[in-house]
Each structure stands twice: as structure tokens, then as C-alpha cells.
Image (cartoon, rainbow, N blue to C red; front, side, top):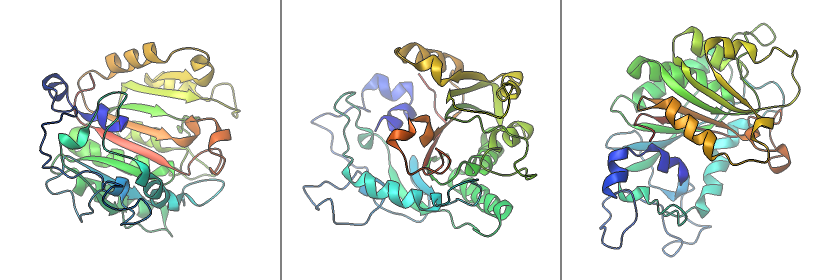
Length: 293
């Protein structure tokens, strides 16, 4: 639920329409209640929301990107969107801790998966780009379920075509700024290098959080820093509150469009042992095209 909390504008936060009240007559889609249908029943859509074929009439949508031919170690991330949806059946509409009840404020649905070519990675990327271009044409905010991190590149291409360069909040163990991988320019470790080269990112509004682990050289993060990225390595987050860092993120992003990418290996792999190279089994991507306040 906190993902949606980030996507609402300051205007909605001020007038309290974003928060749950006892008087709201909900005219929007909302997760199917376990009191109406047992959790084990019903269609396994994201949060048991209604499914529709396109983004017409939606403020935000969930979309799966079942891709794993860009990853370098363990395959299987193509099943990530399906598994995320299955696990999401336990989610309910209100976040008690924050008071957030996003389904009282805007229309959201599950729009299914991108139909992509799993035998040709460049072609798969083009399939993803075209699909997201269609989803965002009416300003719908896509929340993408992955899928290996290669998917970020074509999604950012689609966003740039409509909104221009965007800020980036990237939570990951890896920078994903390699120039090539085994000689290939498109792979799960190269998306942000390609995105910078094509002008998809506002490089002075890019922050990478949680980078860690072994690397090939001590200079592996230097390229990003040279572009203007703010790099926050994992050790900088140990044993302290992340509240000041989040304040910095908000100030850095301002009121311009932001793309959020969360890679599962931003967490300790002890808690997500089924990942590919300690990453890539599931990605959640949010295009936040409203002010971050």
C-alpha cells in the first residue's frame, strides 16, 4: 500500500481524500475482500483487483513483464509477475499505520501482462516499449511487475517519449550501469547506462540506494557518479534511521516526474533466497508522474 501512498499528489494529501473515512461511498475499484470471497478463491489478479484489457479510465494500473532472457545466472523471473499476484491476495485496501486508503481516491486495475518475445531480447524490449507507450498515453501511472531488470530500459524509453527525462529512485544491490555484458549492450546489468545515453534520465535527479557486494573493480560505481548520480552504498544505511535519507530523496526529486525501481536484492538475500544472482526474481517499478512531497 505504501507504493500508492507515494503516487498521490500533495493536493490529495491536503484535502484528505486519500485517507480512509467512514463516509466515503467508494466508486472506484478496490481489492476483493476476503469476507466476500475466500483468499484461496477468485482470479489471481494483483491485489484481487478487477482485470481489464487496457488502461482506459485508469489513474494507475498493474502490468506484468514476464521477462528473464536478459539475466545472467538463474532463469525463472518470467514467473515473477504471476507469483507477485498470487502473494498479493493477502493485501487489503487500508494501511492502518499511515491511514492510506488509495482505492478511495483513484481508479486502478490489473491490465495483465506484456506479450513479449522470449526468444529475442532486443525484440522483447521493443515489445515492452510499445506496450508501455500505449498504457501511458492517457497519463495512466503504470506499476510494473517483473521480470529481470532489462525491462527498465524500454519502459524508460516509453516514458521519455511522453514526459522527457525523469528522476530515478533505484533500490538495488547493483548499479546496472555496465556498458556491455558478454559483448551485448542490452542485458539486465546495462539498463541505466543505455537510459542515460538516450536521455531518458535527469542524471542530477538519480539516486541509487543499497549498492553492495563484490565487484570487478573498485571503480565500478564511478561512471554513475560522473553522470551526477547520488550513490548510497548499503553500508551507509546500516544501524541508522532512513528518515533523513528519504528527506534527501524528496528534496532531490522535487515536483518533477520520477521513476522508482525496486530490485529484490535491495533486501538481504537471506530473506529472498530464490533470486537469480541474488537479484532479479521480482522487480516492482513505479512511474510516479505526480509530485513527490
